[in-house]
Image (tube, rainbow, N blue to C red):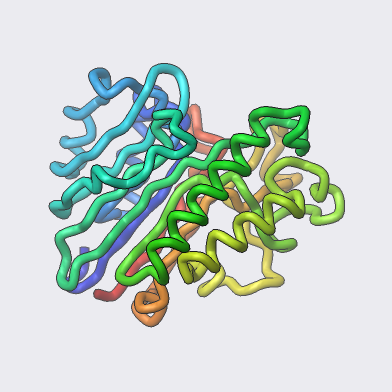
Length: 270
C-alpha cells in the first residue's frame, strides 16, 4: 500500500477452498489492503486461514456456512467486527459482514452478498425473488434509519445491474432477474437511503459499458461479451473526493477454475 492510500477489493470467489490458489494471482495483480469475499461456501471451522495468512492478511473476519453463501473480510489493516449489524430477514444466512477499519479518521466497511433471486421475477410465485426484494428493502430501511453515511464503504455481489450500460442488452434483460425494473428501483432506493455514491461509475460514467460477471453457460464468454455489472463498490459522500483509482480485473475470468465474477478494486487516498 502506498502511503496514505487504501486499496479495497471485492470478489465473489464462488468457493474459497476451491479457489484459494487464485487468491495469490489476485494479490499479485491488485495488491489489496482489504479483500472482501462473497459466496465463500465454507463453514467457519474449515476456512483456510493458513493459506490466507500466507498471502499477507493477518486480520480476518469470516461468516460462513456449508455449501452456499458466506462472506469474509481479509485485511492487512487491523479492524473491529461490527457485531450489532442486522441479521437480514432473520435467516442467519451469512450474507453480510461489517467492520471498522483502523485507518486515520476511521472507516466503516460493509461486505454484502445479496440473494440472487432465482429465475422468475415474480415474488408471488418465486420465494427466492421475494427474499431478494425483502433483503434489499431491509437494508434500505436500515440505511434510512442511520441517516447519510459518513466515512463508509459498501462492497459486494449485490446481484443487481442497475444501469442500461451495466448489461449487454437492456431490452433483452428487462425481464431477466438482476435487471428488472423492480430490482433497479429497489437498489436505487437503497443508494438514496444511505446517500451512497457508485465508485465505479465515478471513474467510468455511462454510457460506457461495464461488466463484472459473465455466465458459465457461455463458453465463449469473451467473444460474445454478454456480461452484467453485479459487483459494486459504494462510498459515502465524504469519500468521493478521495477516490484515486479503480480496476476491474477482467483477465481473472480466464483463470483456471475461475469464478464467473471478477475482482473489482477501488483505491482511496486517505
